Length: 109
Image (cartoon, rainbow, N blue to C red; front, side):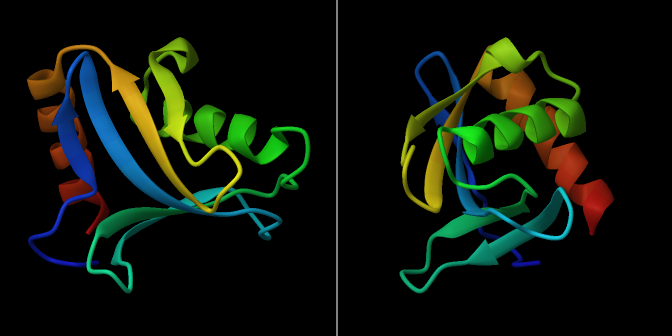
């Protein structure tokens, strides 16, 4: 896990999460934070779904909602729908969400 850098950013209406998605993986899992070649921190996520007809995106939203105990309707892919690099907007109180996810990340390391 990368220290210091965070894939989370406060945005209007909630919290933005930068994600690197790997479809067709052996299992669904959130791997942790990694640095991309451009230095941006991303949350690495794997899903078993194939990247066809939005199946991998749906699996990503389902996995994140379950992992973070949030309703699926609070999560929306706002950037990169057809790319491995995505930005997910979590609707809600940005500071509350940031605290919850920072705590979640601390528990993962």
